[in-house]
Length: 500
Image (cartoon, rainbow, N blue to C red; front, side):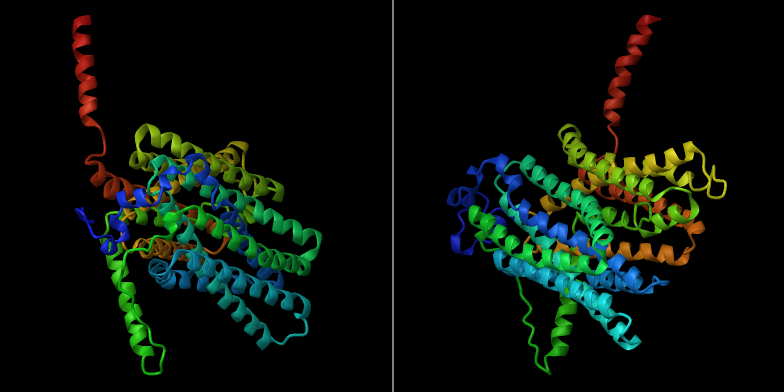
């Protein structure tokens, strides 16, 4: 918690303490509020499109190349997620100590380079797979996984730069509604790309084939890099607040000499431990833990659930794709519901309503996995409840995601290591995302999916309890307005007595 400084010397003021002077020196607040959400949208759109396209394309490419086994895809997912757990905090630290524009351009370039290398390696596998021996195939898989790790960290860096750092700097002298509007716009971009990008990749593979689809995606990845770098430069010039140096912080100097590697590694480990301790002790941690617990969940349209539907039901592929699209649409509705609720009940209570609505909506979905099933056949009411519960839960999920993001931004607005802690939330989410793989490894048969779903439902309820009891209650001082209930009862009881 920073202390107010009276008449500070301008040269000695850390960024986290200069609210009024910044507003006087840089007229950021004079920017039209209606134009803020449009800034950076082009760069965010290209970045998210590329990330979602690569995420879907890599998975189907691995399945197509290495037939009759899910091991390569599992290895890729496990390793890249583990790297995200270990190094996201380090990425956030680098964002904290370096200038904004070169940092985000480095993230863009790194993201595009690693994605392009992966597409190139897939292209080699598609064209010369039959002529490669087993050793070369494993080597190419190892190279794809290594580049995937770099792509994962570059994507984390890009998200921290845009959604945490730049957004807070741009909206620092505006009302809270501007921050919420910008967050909402970015979330809608993510959801639209999550729906449309896989459809685009599927269209490419079904029309021009896997080989030429890799060529097309490689070309798009390289082509959009130039535009992204240009767009972030335009945004940077329009907002002088982005050029303000961040607060001075300790930087561990790593000397990559033969004798200094051990010390550098030890310093890096100490820095990570320090960051985690600081994160855990921060009041926002329990809010971050609650959103991370939601990643320990197989009740979404990912591979395990789709495999269950295809093996244990008679649902057609178009129906499954349609229901997946419906869930994305209801997720978009959540980004409209959250601002509406926030105006009426406040940010913290909005989070409570959202996460409990998700938990309760998933109850009929899990129940339908146990009852009303006759082999692959299921009655209409069972199918309706199954998909209705899934769709309604997306409203609560994305409303809570947006509420929690805003809470995180406000809690770390003046923190000197805000990007380090923000990146550690990504690490926390990856930890529970990795735990989700454990569920499907333990219950790996489609018929056993219902047990993994039951555990997932339990984790959602635990997340709701963590948020309400661990975060919302200390922030608000209570869970329920008992005094309002008593006042309403006191008004009703005398009236009943008079009626008697």
